[in-house]
Length: 97
Image (cartoon, rainbow, N blue to C red; front, top):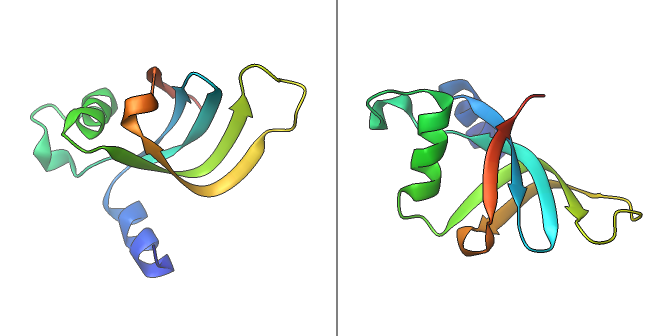
C-alpha cells in the first residue's frame, strides 16, 4: 500500500487496536475499520464484526507485535503490515492503546 493510500485510509475511517489469538501466536495491531455507511449501527464493535464476517478470507493489520504463546521468553516480532488468514483466528477483541 502506498503512503498516499494509507494516509487517505487513515483520514476516511477509524482504526482500532485489536488482539488476535491463534493456536501459536498472540497478535496485536491496528485494524482500519470499513466505512461506517455499510453498517446500520456503526459502533467500533459492529464495524469489527462486519470486517471479520463479511466474507473476506484475510484481514490486514498495521504496526503489529507478534508473540509466540508457548515460548514467551523470546522477543516479540514487530511487523509494519501483516495479513492474517481468518481461518486460523481463534478469537479477536478490541483492546485499549
